Image (tube, rainbow, N blue to C red; front, side, top):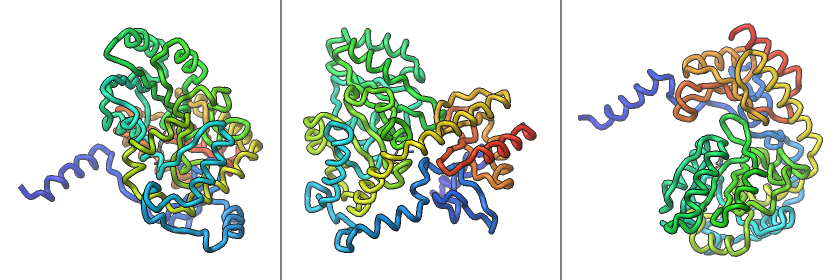
Length: 388
Ligand code: PMP
């Protein structure tokens, strides 16, 4: 058989199912996108605080960074010659804010595929929420741990697993893994309850991914862990800079010993060129700035709650408690068609389809950001009300 035909047939099958992916031209994190000369409001980006599209902030950054510090490549891993001051400065600054050690990674994906394999062995059990991000699943698969998924946010089932495995002599450590704000439904884990469960089970360590909460939640924007006052009780508090922080990279807040352990055992950290130091310098600049953006966080919270009500008024379930607002429509083709119609009306909303989301839950995902105003939402929901 012709090998290319084999791969093309698989792609054709995806097209038939409405699940074919392709890059789109000329998109960015700007709030107003241009498509064929027509403006579109960006409701698909993770630039929740509108900082990636903020030209004045970018200019202020370059104004204070001398050219000799604008390093565009680290040229090696941090363990060789790539440990530029920008990385250590950012870690120091974050460590002061969070009150524990911090270690940086090239991306959130590297972070999630690297930490769990480094920390687990065959006597480790990973208990992961059914809806954790693909990068966490890949990390679990690369690890030598045993693993089970508990039903999404079902802490009753999680408790049953914990009680069973707490008594199992083959298991020394149980790592419970969740996101704080979930990327598909925009709902959130009950961090306080998870911390209580941890306190009742001596084998438990908590791993919480704050990718969609850093910058958005908490008085200083440190995430749900700050908001619910459990910053120091989550063993592995991780997040990414690619969303509200308008940069690139991942981080862990943890005990210093864990930091040292990861530096010695985490393969994506050891064997990959560190990110460009200028990116870390920019992350630090944004990290400082975002801590003061409480008014923006409040605006986003109000807007989010308006959008949940809009979805409910359509007679649909709205699991969201955050700025990520799904409009669950069922079939992939329907989600594609409604997204297209919204785009024609000037709203850049994207459909999410299986396998990214479970079968029959294809949806529009509205990602709100600080630049969106209530009147944008009023008009968008008026269209949806007419069509659905
Ligand atoms: N964790 C979660 C929950 C995410 O949603 C994502 C990205 N969508 C990642 C990790 C990966 O982060 P990055 O984009 O920085 O690789």
